[in-house]
Length: 416
Image (cartoon, rainbow, N blue to C red; front, side):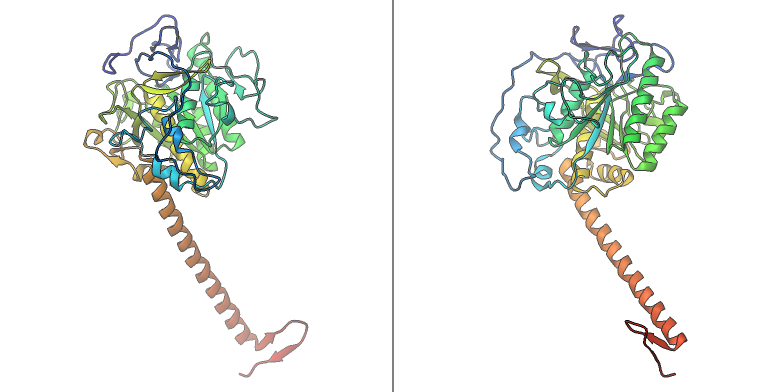
C-alpha cells in the first residue's frame, strides 16, 4: 500500500486506531481530546522467523561495544541498514565510538509491550523487583486487569520499542501503557497523563511519546514543564494529519507545546521526502527520521512493517539514548540542540522542519563529543580563573592584616 493513500476510518477502533487483524492503521474522528498513535496507512509484510546475518564490518573493541551484526538482524529496518548509505540514520560510526558511561532508561508511553519477545525481553526495565512475565512495566489504561502487566494487544507499543532497541541495543525500556481500545478519548488522555507523571517522577532519561491529539491539556503541560525542569528529554510525534502544525488551527499536542525539552519528529521515506500523511512545520517540527514501512518487532515473536511518525519518533529516542549513555551530563536542552545541529540537510526537507534535515546518529555522537570536550575546557578555565581570584583575594587580605598564618597557632608579623 502506498504511503500516499489517505488515512481511512475503521468503525472497529477508537483513539489509537491500530488493528493488527486488519493489518492496517486507521484513525477515527472522536472527542476533542482524543489521543491516538502516530501511525499512517500501511500493510505489513509476511511475518518471518528470527534470523541473523553476519556483518563484515563487525569489530569488537571493548566490553561496552555494540555488536554490528545487529544492523542486519531480522528486526532491523532500512533506517539502520548500512547498505542504505543515502537514507539510513548512519549508525555504524556511532556504534564503533560508543562507550557506556551510564545505563539509560527510555519510557515508552504506548500500547504496552510483549514481555516474551526475543528481541526485547533483555531490555525490559522495571523500577521495583525484577523484570519477569509477571512484572514488566505499568498499565495505566482504564479497566486494566493487572497493573504490572502492560500487555500489548495491539502491536504498536512493541513495534515502537523494537525501533528504539534497534538503534541503541543497550537501552533500558520502561513500558508504560495508556491505551484501552474500549475507552473513550478522554479516558485514554487521562491514562496518558498518569503515565507521563509517573515517568517524570521516576526521573527517566528520555520519554518516547509516539502519539498525541489536537487539543492541549493543562495537566499534561504542567507535567511536561516539570520534565523540562528535571532535564528529561521528551521525543514527540508530529502526527499524521497531513498538516502544517505551525498553523495554530492544526496544532498537535504535546508536540505543539513548544517546550525546550520536547523534540518533535516528522517522517520521511527512502527518497528522503516527508510522507504525505505526516504533519510538518519549519518552526514547530524539529527533525525528520525514517517512517515509511519500518520493520520492527511485533507481539508473539513476530516482526512486521508499520508506517508513520510513531516510527520516526522511536528512531530519535534511540539516538538520544545512545548519545546520553556516553555523555550523561548533557541536559535535555543540550541533547535536543545536538540532535538538531547534527541533522543531515536535505533539499526535500527544507521548510518541513526547523533543522531542514534528517537524523544522523554518527554526527550527533561526534558533535556530542566535541561539545562535551569544549564544555569541559570552559569549565576548567572557569575553575582555574576562580581559584586565581580566590588566591589573590586571600593574598590581599593577608597584606591588610599584616599576618601570615602557619599550621598551628604561631603567627609572624609581616613587614609593612
